[in-house]
Amino acid sequence: MFKILIVDDEASMRTFVQHALADDEYDIRTAASVPEALDHVREEIFDLVITDLMMVPLSGMDLLRAVKELSPETEVLMMTAYGTIETAVQAMKLGACDYITKPFPVDELRLRVAHVLERKRLQRENRWLREELFQHFGIENLVGQSPPFLHVLEKVRRVAPTDATILLTGETGTGKDVIARAIHLLSRRASRPFIAVNCAALPEQLLESELFGHVKGAFTGAVANRKGLIEEAAGGTFFLDEIGSIPLSIQAKLLRVLEQKTIRRVGENREIPVDVRIIAATNRDLNDALRRGEFREDLYYRLNVVAIHLPPLRARREDIPLLAHHFLRQFSQRDQKAIVGFTEAAMTALMKYAFPGNVRELRHIVEQAVALASGQWITVADLPAHVRTATTASEERELETALNQVERDLILQALRRNEGHLERTARDLGMSRVTLWRKMKKYGLAKRFVPSSDSPQ
Image (cartoon, rainbow, N blue to C red; front, side, top):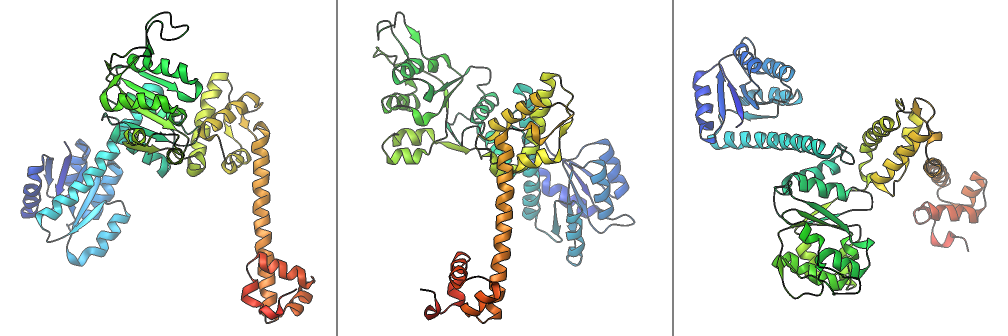
């Protein structure tokens, strides 16, 4: 239940707001002044304070500043008369979440309050999600504050409690396996098995047997009945990594699992009921596989009930320092090294590197750097050669871009000075007419300044 504090020096207004919100099952307190309100805030933690702006001797602005100091996570909604809207906007700059102009209808107030508290609920649940993930298996590969990363966490929070089939997409090394396990641990199936199989790592016959099991004599070497991994995951979650590599013959059997909740062991016609949640992952473009006839359309739609795309590390560069320091702490502790951090040059090199292997590659790079480091800081020399080379290449590209821009500007100025005449412009710049023409085409200046009759042959 959300706790709300209503503050207004007019008793009638306090009563109006309290009655307006009474049907929404909020825990409500009221205060007639700023000092009284602050007494409440010191004693209890409120989710929302609804306060009048114009009160004396202390105003709603005074209350806002005090609340944000005493309880930073408490939201403040300002009630203001028409003539004080500018002040209300100023209040929002100081941390108020919203304002509502008097007089206001009951429905508008309820809507504003519901919106603020829904945002509070999401913040609370995301914090709970992080705590759960840390408690279960640490926060490796789940470190970050970038919008793409938080979007993934929000989807995880929403779908984990359901039984919906999930398709995880993203490049190699983005952490699809970690997200799959997180979804399982935050689901109602958390106490049951989580079993994963890499579909690309096994040949067709062995994969079929691993997934669905087999009976004695089904093939050479099948000396006894054996349960498949899907059966072993009964009541829990089954994670199919690299689903795009699964052969068409096995895709039909997997479709039966999703549609009928049954399996057939290799060499047996009897159907066995199974209760598992399926999470699949791929780094391939399954739409492209559909067009080439390599993936069944009906299976694709059964798997793609909820899609979660994991962004590559280059799309969330602001998370690189956080991840790098996380891995640094991890490996420094493991290797018993007192490494403080990264030099500025080393971190710049990491920030400029493209990370084709994503978070997994960053983890490997930091592990290697910790092993090689001889001092308290990770230096550029401790980083792999390809990271250092990529940084140099990046700097060279930046320099080339800057020089090209300077050259373009010089040519443009000379063309304007010589009214677009090629011969005079070439002499002015100390280059041949043909060289000038080639550079003008390179920089997109040819059509702007040169008549077709004046173009070089």
